[in-house]
Image (tube, rainbow, N blue to C red):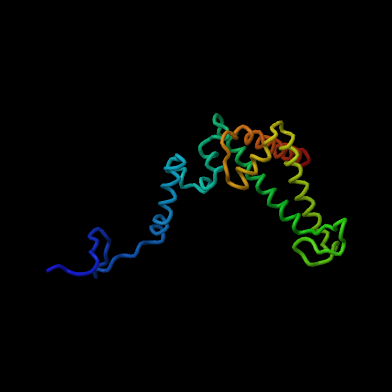
Length: 196
C-alpha cells in the first residue's frame, strides 16, 4: 500500500522534527535571480562573473563589461562608461529643469505651462539658477556631441543610453559621442584644478 500526497524530497534539509528548513533570504534571492543571470549568459555571451554585475542589465553596461567601448585600453573603457553615465545624469537634470520653470508663451500669456501652478516669475531665484545651471550643463555636452564630426552621434547616444536599444554597427558613433563628452568632463576638471 502506497502513501498518498506529495512525494517527499529526500534531498531537502530538515529539522530534527522532520519539517523542512525554510530557505534563507540569500538562497531565495539566488533562486529569483538565477533565470535572469542564465539568460544574460546565454543570450549576451557574458561570463558568469560579469553577468551578475548591475551594469549587465543595460546594453550600454554590457558593452562596457565586454570592453566594446574601447577594446584595447581598460582605463579608457572606464572613462567612456563614466562619460555615458554623465550624459544620462545631465540629461535627467535638464529634463527636470525644463519641467520646473514655466516659460511665458508668445502666443497666449494667460495659459498655464509646466508642472507648477504658480504664476510665471514666482519661482525662487535659487530654483531658477539651479535650473539654468542644469540647462547650460546639458547644452555644453550636447553642443560637443553635435560638433564631434559624427552626424549620428547624438541619436546613437540617446538610443544606447536613454532607450536601451543598441543599434547594429553604431559603436563608432557611440565612441565618438562618448569621447566628446569625456573631453568636456576632462576640460572642466582641469579648469577647476587650475582655479583651486
